[in-house]
Image (cartoon, rainbow, N blue to C red; front, side, top):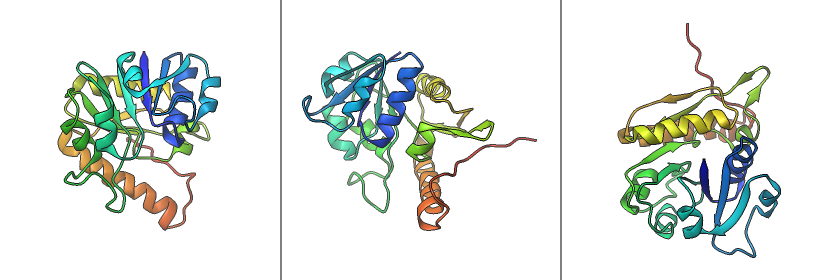
Length: 203
């Protein structure tokens, strides 16, 4: 798959690395080609850097892992026919004005309707290594786009996670962000530390 990574910090960098190892073509989209966070990602296989609009143009799927959801969405250029995976959250009220979730802001400022929320409910450290003993963590996805969900589920497995569970449509975007805050609360506020993650058990 041809993947554009918008946001080359902790989350974007971790996923870019995992997906490059899995054989995907990684197009990093940055504002300044000569000075951007995550230059070391160019040492990964199958990885190049472009302007944001060029990275989007060259890719089928766009991962957004950057702050300022509205500004980033507006910077993408034409997203017609593209799948956008939103890995962001509004935390402590810091987010796009007038929107309850980052995914809603993206939908309002792009052409595509294929926007799903995924990779937002755990820390970047778990994206670097989702294994706990002999078990891999699970992730979750929400959105109306069936195609987007199927792509996200495949990319979850390609990043080394076990399963990706469907939690509903666009009306579950807010629930996904609340779940992210649950992880943040346990890890940071309650002092459990970042080395925790979620696994759905069945009986």
